[in-house]
Image (cartoon, rainbow, N blue to C red; front, side):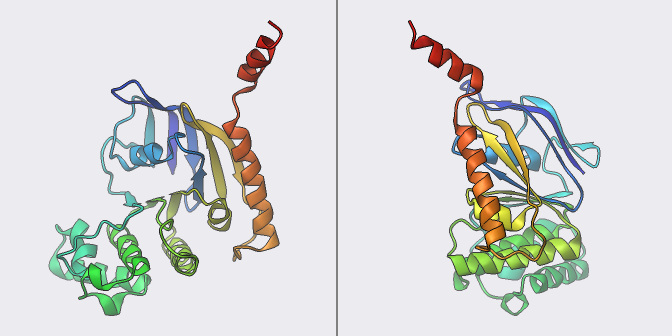
Length: 258
C-alpha cells in the first residue's frame, strides 16, 4: 500500500533530517511513529503527504510515486487549520470544490455524520470546542476520499476525555472506510492504544531504530495492564534510541584509556 525506500532529506542549511528510511505500511493498517525531538517524524509525514520533496529515495502509494500532494493521501495536522470565515460544512467541502454541487453536499453530510457533527454544519469554527474543531479537520480530510490518512500529533492539545472521544471516532472511521492510517505522536500510550505497529525512530539524522508490534486485541482500553505493558516496551525502545550507536559508545569508552 505505502512503500518508502531509502528515503533521505537534507535541508539547504546542511541539516540531515532523515537518512535511509525504509518502511512499508500494509493496506488497512494503523502505524504510529514515535521518537524524540530531532528524529524527523514530522518531516517524514510531510514527505509522505507530498508537501516536501525528498533529497533521495522514493515514496509510493499503490505503486504510484508521491512527488506532490496526492489524491489518495489525506492529512490532519496538530492544529485544525480551519478557515474561520467559512461554516463547518464549507470547511469540509473546501478540498472538493471541483465536484458537482449535489455530490459535494452528499459527501459533506456523510463526512460530518461520521464524526458526529452533522447538526453543526452551519456553525462557524469559533463556535465549536477544540475537540469539535479537530473532528471537522478529520471530516475535511475524509471528504476527499483518501486511502491513506496521515495524522501529525492531532490530539496532543486536547484534554484526556476529548482525546479518548476522538480516538473512538478515528477507529470507527478506520474500520468503516478501510483506511490505512499513519499517526505521529509523542504519547506512547496513545500509540499502543491505536496502532497495529509502532515505529521507533532515532535522531541525528532521523532513521528507524525499532519496530514494535502491538499484540493486544481490539477493543483496547487505555490504561489497561496490557496497554501499559506495551507502553513500557515502547519507553525502553525510545530510551535505547536516544543512546549513541554501539560503535560510538565503544570509541567513547576506548578514549578513557588514553
